[in-house]
Amino acid sequence: MTEGFKTEQEAFWSGAFGDDYVDRNRGEVLAAGRTHMFSNALRRAGTIGSAVEFGPNIGLNLVALRRLLPAIDLAAVEINAKAVESLKRMDGVEVHHGSILDRHVTRTFELAFCSGVLIHINPDALPTVYDNLHAASHRLILLAEYYNPAPVAIPYRGHAERLFKRDFAGEMLDRFPDLRLVDYGFQYHRDPNFPADDLNWFLLEKTGR
Image 1 (cartoon, rainbow, N blue to C red):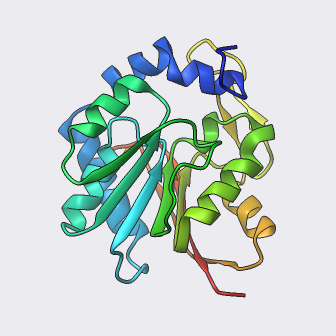
Image 2 (image 1 turned 135 degrees about the horizontal axis):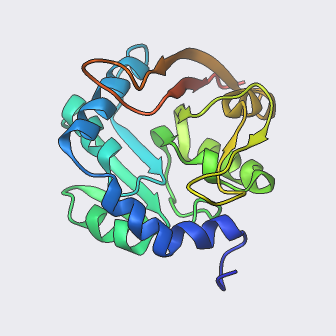
Image 3 (image 1 turned 45 degrees about the horizontal axis):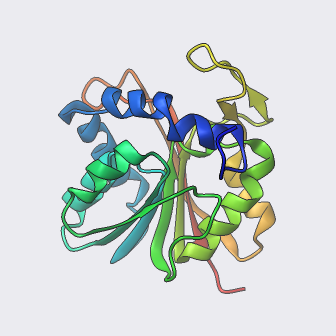
């Protein structure tokens, strides 16, 4: 395992496979699908002035958010150096290069979110990521991930132990009594206008309890 990382999955995504992922995930069609998802996922969120993304890759979700909310204050935590180079070329984005298993942001945001990221985290490390997401938000948390009612590992592009499905939102609701479910939905890969991964999204809110 690469020195400095706590899990094999971190080393995997920070290296050559993560670099290849950067090259695969570009284009306006993908960006349009992300914009469509956020327009649905945040319809009950109220005003959002700031957001931090855990694991943004090259920032397609940040592009989508800025299209919907031009004045939003954005930040990102990304493990892959090649993706970080792309993020740093985006105007007005506070970029942190590192693992989401570590604390990087020193302030809180109205929205902390991740999309297609928790599915690639070592299951033993998920509580740490949940804690970091919770700590980074003072109001909303959005999870957009593959859902399964019970934890399951699935081969990913020929690799074992690199993709995991489970009820991420349910686990966060159980872990943090101050969270409530605001809204949830599904994005379908056969949508004729906005095809994307089959993601379930869950919008959670801190209640102050």
